Amino acid sequence: MTKLQLKLNNIVEIATLLESPDLLNIGALANQKRCEIHPEETPVTFVIDRNVNYTNICSCKCRFCLFNRNKEDKDAYILDYETIKKKTEELVSAGGTQLLLQGGLNQDLPLEYYTNFLIKLRKDFPNLAIHAFSPAEIVFIAENNNLSVKELLEEFVKSGLSSIPGGGAELLCDDIRHKLSPNKICSKKWLDVMETAHNIGLKTTATMVFGFGESAGHIAEHLLKIRQLQEKTGGFTAFIPWTFVPAGNFYGLSNNINNTAFDYLKVLAISRLVLDNIPNIQVSWVTQGLKIAQIALGFGANDFGGTMLEENVVKAAGISNNTCVQEIITNIQKAGFQAAQRDTYYKIIKTF
Image 1 (tube, rainbow, N blue to C red):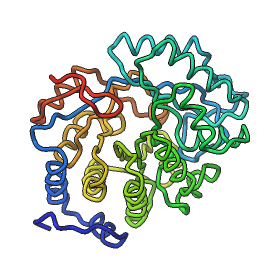
Image 2 (image 1 turned 45 degrees about the vertical axis):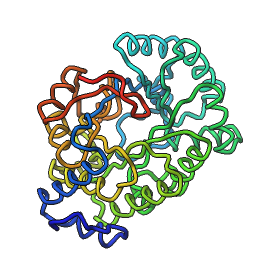
Image 3 (image 1 turned 30 degrees about the horizontal axis):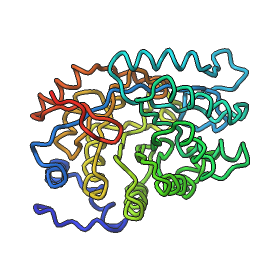
Image 4 (image 1 turned 90 degrees about the vertical axis):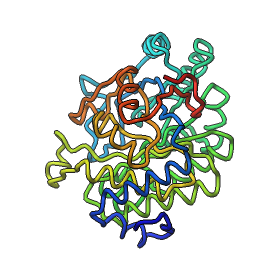
């Protein structure tokens, strides 16, 4: 494994690499691939964003999620537009360009709830990218309103939607999904939403959460499914892998899960090698911390993600990493790269 001549076009090949203990060599290969896609003088990018969760009421009840609530719970909530607007004003005041909106699967919310806040956000913040609604939310909202996914997405685009985040993928392997999230959409539906989005001109990201006790073959299957869809549509702008956070989580504690930085860096590096048709690999400082994220820049990643002025889901699991623009810039520069602020579509706004 001294030359970058890996085919990595089937599950067995990828799984074999995932099972290798040779992290440093895999990292070097991933860094070489990164340099092919993004020459060494290319800045490492980041976006100033905020994650607003419009409701925590969710019928999905994923076994690893500590964020969801029943509507009868005292701390259950649905944000009104004025609250969303205030949070967005704070984002824009901080120089933000991207608002990430995601929420639980709340069957009491009518279609107008979503379209109204999209329309109002677009009117009040015309230059802001609205990066919203995971595939699970999209399928749920569509079914709740007797619409096809395509019809709903077209309505959302008309109302102001800019792009779609890749949340809710976890692992695109239905045996794992059934064990973790029996009420969540299957892997085919997740991929179908993304393909539909790409076909109507919406760019999206893709994600992977691993470390649930799955096999290397499951991770390989996920990566190949993402690669194959990208070959077909070219609509993914970035891929973001991160480890399941077991802290304070019954699923994690009961299954003795202890994910390490070693696991994260190896899977991230292999993601760069397999997904050479997706331009950007993003670190996850939110789950891994800033230092591991900084190290990941030498393992194939070229994007530091967002400033995340607000983050609630990972925080509910017991992990609370925070940062600011200057801290991100400093971490990138100390890793030997120039830093650059980007927009949602990876166009550079400003270099540092």
